[in-house]
Image (spheres, rainbow, N blue to C red):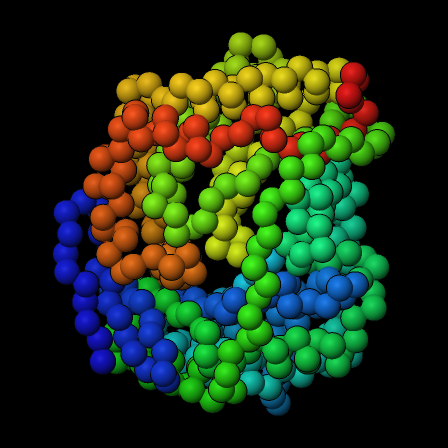
Length: 423
């Protein structure tokens, strides 16, 4: 059964609710091109990895398309390629996701292969070692860079002892020790029918989506993944310097944000766009690059994990300029907290956020993923239609209040990886 949300003024997608297999999916039906996309997720992912076994969920997700049921890895890849099906699974810090994009005529095969991947993964030893080697190489590349080292230290310092502090993709050491039994156990914990969020877009009717949901998810085990530990308060760890031989230093900086369900969420997005996320027009870019030439680029925004936003920013600059760059950043942070935004800054930020909104839903895959993100953040079905109106209703008084509440320059934490002068 299905029911469409009422039309609203401004940018809107005709989101329908489709119910099947004990689940509710959001659907944007569009037959302009014969392509359909499905996206689904559970809470969990890397947060369910055991300490010292980081990367288990990520490896398990990658192995779901490396052979299933009677199909070897090669045969499974051939079946996807022959029908031009893009099937993928992945594990993030706090979620485990799957999805596919396929031509309408290939939809039955996409559903069949997706179900087979979740229900009967093979974990052939040669496939496990191939995926392991790829994951170790990626982790090594990431963690060898100054930026990678700074990011790892930032999360470890901000949330010590919590899963949010760990590398979701694992480290070379943790990945090397993950066995097949641990990979199977990770999927047994994660893949259940309850707690599953589903979204779809493109050339698929509500009735066909309901059939696909029954086939994809109807046979999954009952129950839900384990409950995730709540995110603790952000630890204001000050400044950390990691000695790395490099002519430049990479800096990851940030502070606590606010819950995704907070009524000030969108006002905070506007404030951060003005301060740090507006490209060349942002205050940080103007102060750091345009006026002083301290760095090529700098930016910050809300990074969401465990349904909570953390303000996260990055910059890279010459070792001799790191101290000044951080000082200027803190000054702009304080200025925004003290004075808020001008009318012109607010108007520009709102115009960008409302005008660029349709670009986030420009094709079937992005639409399905965008709908899924809304559901992950607990948005109501009419949230998207009302967003332009809510943004246009913001005032400089509201932005000033949110900036004062949100931005705390005295606790702005930073990790510097490099050989900074004067720190």
